[in-house]
Figure 1 (cartoon, rainbow, N blue to C red):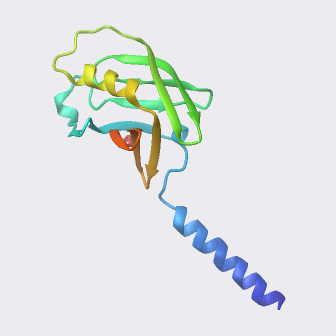
Figure 2: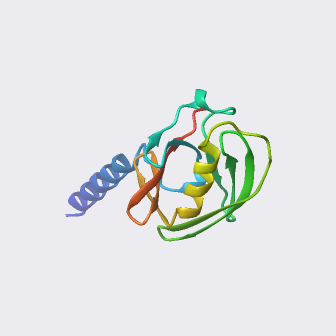
Length: 136
């Protein structure tokens, strides 16, 4: 009976480990690149400094890039409810509308959903941004 129990526990641990392998489970373990903004796919070559990015630190600090300017702000996380504040930002001239779209999108975010290695930042159920782990 004990052997059967130990085998079942072992199988359970193995299945659980396999189901979470390759998935990201926390926002603050990863540097995120924005791959889609307000339904538009972004390309790194279209921006001065590559794709916009977000970095969440454990103490509620948020920092990143708009693809042109850098910022440092804060975030509040309660379960899957999320709010972002870009805070202070550098003030370089940025061609195009991507930076303004990014800043508007940040203010609309109310929650998030992790799906595998994709971070979806949402306004209710609508995707505002899709992010992927930043390539190193």
